[in-house]
Length: 220
Image 1 (tube, rainbow, N blue to C red):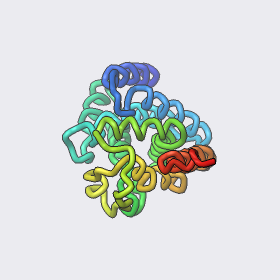
Image 2: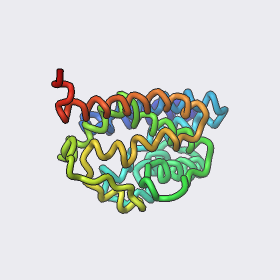
Image 3: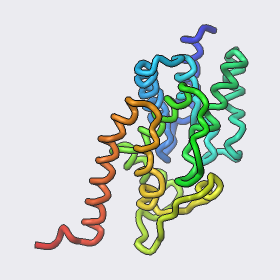
Image 4: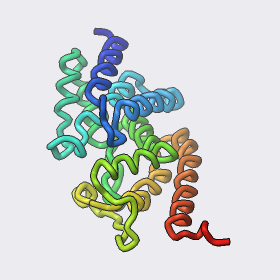
């Protein structure tokens, strides 16, 4: 298969795999990440085939939905091999997938080694913030049976990936523990610009949420 055919078949495969998801990690999320990654790729003049393949497969082995430690993206690897993707490309895409996820507020430096990986990571993070990010955060919180907000629950800046993975934070806490941090963790200039507006949308939402939670909008 040529590269265009591999991308087409991969998109069809991923759409089937993620159909019916209600956690905010559905095919539409993947499609948005894919589309955003292409735009960022054009700005950065990166390898488009690598970017598209990694964007499409980035959630296939996600630790949140698979019984693995996030270190071996075995399903993505098997799919690429079945499509006849060259070994070096398979290794590069697997490396991107391993490192794309947020690992905790204090978990250390970004381990992404390639420009293509930075682009896919930015595209995924952009979909985690803004209006869509707000909706996805509450969808995932409901999926995990987490409360929207618990005034008694403290915010935790997780020091390791393991600590972050095991967190049971309320959804509003998740904004402070991850989502509001992403604006300053974008890699590319275009993503940093886009993130500014999406970050403001979350700040304004949280201000309104607390206003209504405390009933201050009921006051004359």
